[in-house]
Each structure stands twice: as structure tokens, then as C-alpha cells.
Length: 115
Length: 108
Image (cartoon, rainbow over all chains, first blue to last red):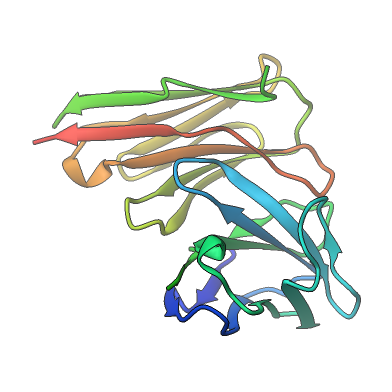
């Protein structure tokens, strides 16, 4: 099956710094990648849809300037949490698919802790 | 009512027991995923199903499209199977719908 990786798997940072999380499709070209956030003991919540070469589409309530998404190539999307605060501490998961109408393959997730 | 319902929400089993986790959904789908999330948070994609049955080691997943129901079975359960199991359905548009997860604990 298709493989999606995320890096780093976990990161600890100081409040006010920015953190970049990478999502890569290892064995296929991903036109569309999705970013999810998961709060403790809750289900995954879609944050944004990232399409290669165009601006991301954010879900209602997600701050575009806070969570910067770049999908510069068919195998890489990045999520940058800018000026991170402790309330941004969460588990961030990406998924990738060949296009938005096809099923997605999930990455293992990245745990962010902001001190 | 959630579009994707999982049962049970919590399950404790003794090592060696046969375990079944159920997922019912109310929307038309093109695929269904079973995901495993360990206490550390990492997600592992176990199965992607659009029909029938798949088997991988001690894990078996089935889906009945007409009944809008899927089951995940674990044979000869082991403490390392302790995790949260999440059912996610793909309606064919871009947005997955996730179940709330089943928290499994297997005791030695």
C-alpha cells in the first residue's frame, strides 16, 4: 500500500517560536494532502486541504495565518505552526491522496508540545 | 446521531480472546479505513476496504456495503494490541468522517 511519512514524529518548542511539520508521500504523487488535528481523547478534526501548486483551503475556525500550509511539490506538504502557544499543543496528522476524490493514506502523526 | 458509530467505546479483554469492534455508518462511501492509534499517538493504517474481507496476520476486517457496516476482528489478542481503533469512512468527496474510536485494553 501507499506510504505517507511525517517528520518530526514529536517536537517540543518554546512559546513564541514557529514549528514546521513535513508530510511526504513516499511512493506516489499526491495532488491533495490533508492536515488534521487531534485533541486528547477526541477524533481527528480536519484543519485544511492542501493542493499542489495552489493555496490551501482551510476549514471554518482554523486560522490561516497561524497554520501556514505549503504544498510545493507532489510529494511534500508542510504545516508551519507560527508563534506557537501552549494551546497549540496537539497531535497533527496528515493524509495524502492522488487527488481529492480518491481515498487517502494516513501519516503516523506528529506530537507537538509547546512549553 | 453521528454519521459513523463505533461499538463498543471501551473494551477490556484477556490475552488470547477473540475481539470484535464494529463500525456502522449512515452515508454512502467509496472506502472505509481501520486505523490503530497507540498510546504514544502514532497512527497505523491497518486496512482500507471497499468490499468483502481482508486479512493481515491476526487481524481481519470485513465490510458489508448494503448494510453499511464493517467489523474489525483480532484473533488471539495480545497486550500489544492495546490501542484505540478508529473507523474512518470516505464518502467520495474530500472529507473523511471519523468514528470516535474504540479503546481496547488487553490484559496479560
